[in-house]
Length: 83
Image (cartoon, rainbow, N blue to C red; front, side):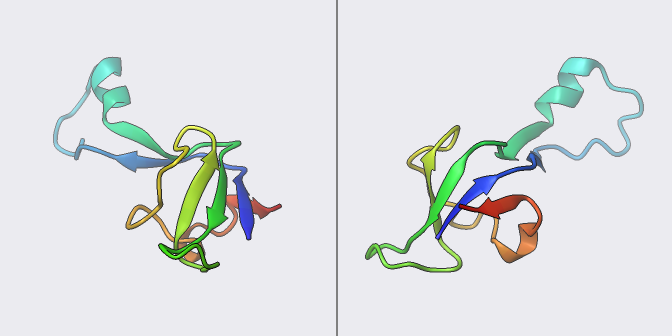
């Protein structure tokens, strides 16, 4: 199964609560892309078998990386389209 990201998702690197007002650089550096629109992921496991949980990015910002521990498909329904 191949899936394409249709909606960005972000990971919060820092806890901004309690900081009050922050400048733009601090704010922007607190987030990183988790899922990037247009990236294509393929369902695989270490042996190359199809799996519902383990995906490898085959095209895009995370190309060559696995989702191992970053996100799971069920937790991000609505962020992908099956292609």
